[in-house]
Image 1 (tube, rainbow, N blue to C red):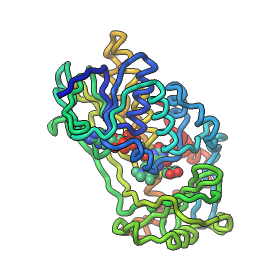
Image 2 (tube, protein in one colour):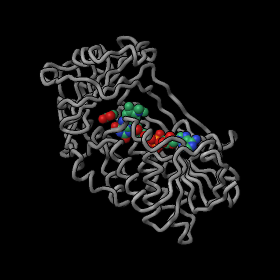
Image 3 (spheres, rainbow, N blue to C red):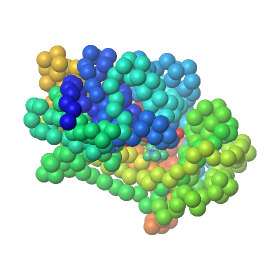
Length: 391
Ligand code: RFL
Ligand code: PHB
């Protein structure tokens, strides 16, 4: 067995783990990242597209914001479409803030390049990662790399290994509480090199089901349609997707639709999930390891960034001699997480067709959306949640 040591062992090289590593490096704290997949696999996952100002600020602080500022598309608003009517939510006029459209793939690539450039250690294809002695002052991780057993000793473990990771399940069942809601539909997403129908993201409530028009660049579109949980991606041809997507658009957006071959197509289930607490002993959870939101509010990656912003600060304080930050980490992170859970659940409920709910639910959606159109107070509430609540 080969033995090594670091200050903070990070499990998972998604955006949470990579950003935490970069923020810790800035603070002079050593970390090693253990990732079960290859770098190419991690970069191949097409996910989030919208960054809040807080996430942009943290990427700047970590020193990886240059390309994001060059290539990211700044949006002052987004569109809500219902009953064929388009209602623009003017984020900037309502909150003074904006969002940036920049894909998770690009964020991840920037963070990986930065880490490699700074010579910071990341072990890809680390097998059988297991956490040990997290309740003691000397936690450690065992794993296998290229067939050789490894042991990594550390002061702290950051569990940034996503919803299916090992970190959360290392917390004893007697301590961990989980809260979950699974939605009775999924999102079928398609990525294509065609000009987007709108540079502002459009969320569509339609009798056939929800649709979302997003983008990655002026020449690359990311579109979604609500689908049945039983649907399989193989059963959706590109033509079938384009026909369904077009059918859910209002005329003025449908007229701008350009179709083309898909680069990627996948189905994601929708779930709300929170694990409490986010710290146990020397283990901290961050990002999807601790919580999942349905993608309707574009909050997942932004919550992950917020968590690691708090955690990096808390760990830096620890090494300066105060444990106040690490003792308060779970409470502070969860206070923000639950508000984003509420917004994502509300937005999902307002925009989708629920197969088992009848016309009453539909009328409620219509009333809510009517109210939104007529009330600046309601628009402001939506806008301040969309641009992101403070840390
Ligand atoms: P990730 O990205 O899942 O990374 C976790 C990493 O841990 C690794 N791992 C392990 N490593 C070692 N040992 C183990 N046992 C391990 N188990 C797992 C995994 O291989 C992986 O590399 O979690 P992280 O870093 O917390 O980041 C969270 C975000 O990825 C996620 O919240 C967002 O993608 C959610 N999301 C969106 N968020 C936004 O803020 N804005 C959006 O517009 C947005 N759109 C979306 C989304 C997620 C989607 N899907 C597919 C779930 C759209 C979609 C369709
Ligand atoms: C995306 O571009 O993938 C995206 C945008 C907004 C969302 C969810 C996903 O709310």
